[in-house]
Length: 317
Image 1 (cartoon, rainbow, N blue to C red):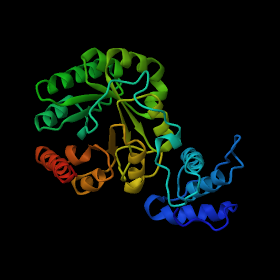
Image 2 (image 1 turned 120 degrees about the vertical axis):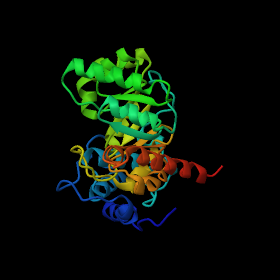
Image 3 (image 1 turned 60 degrees about the vertical axis):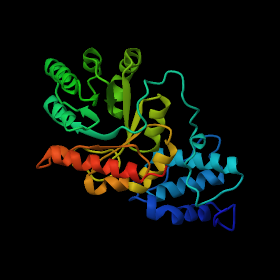
Image 4 (image 1 turned 180 degrees about the horizontal axis):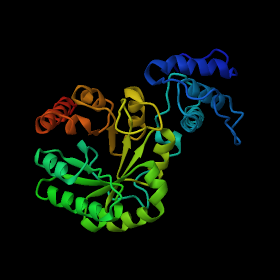
């Protein structure tokens, strides 16, 4: 066992040991003034209390800190010892059951490769012809006719290219047009999930879900999606995020926990950061500005695709 507190009954000592072991890799600015109350039957567990304090000190939001603390309790019981250096990364410690599960969505490749998030069908066609393997149409409009026209045009644009088309949010139009999949954010899931999820399952479309930390990851995983997006990895100006940028350290432990699920890292990723992102174990990286703001988007796509090829060539075996 790694270095651990000498007094196993002192939760403050355990909490400090966890923080010391993981601050450089996982720490973010602390949100809130006090750690959340553990509650429940296990609230008095010293491991839970220590891990909860430590997760809060490392800057995890309350819901995520509680997920980490409960996982640490399960890990300690499973291994028979508390280890401050062993950040929980086993699915069983987070209450995740075996896969595949009943009601899961249609499967997709473990590695979706370069995943371009694009504003309209013209961009979808352009990047499909440039060889980008996975494309998300993120067309923002309240005009139902315009949405339907864009989704149909995007589906037509990828025909014959081998590209996979995911439609953000507009799930009914995606089903009608025969898209490959649909992507929903957490807010979208709250808003349309009750209607969208059964319809998407019945139609055989893939489902991708956005997440921003442990609590949302566990919620998403319970639905059996085709893939899970993890973000934001780096700062991004494209949309307001519910949590600070997670960074490479957190991305690596998230990828380890969800290693059996196809994963897409997203948020502030460009060519300079791509190698480090892929080294965490994710099979896909989502990009927006790295393509749509590039002086030569096709050349930018080729450079990013080479980054995936270089990573694959360097992989063992």
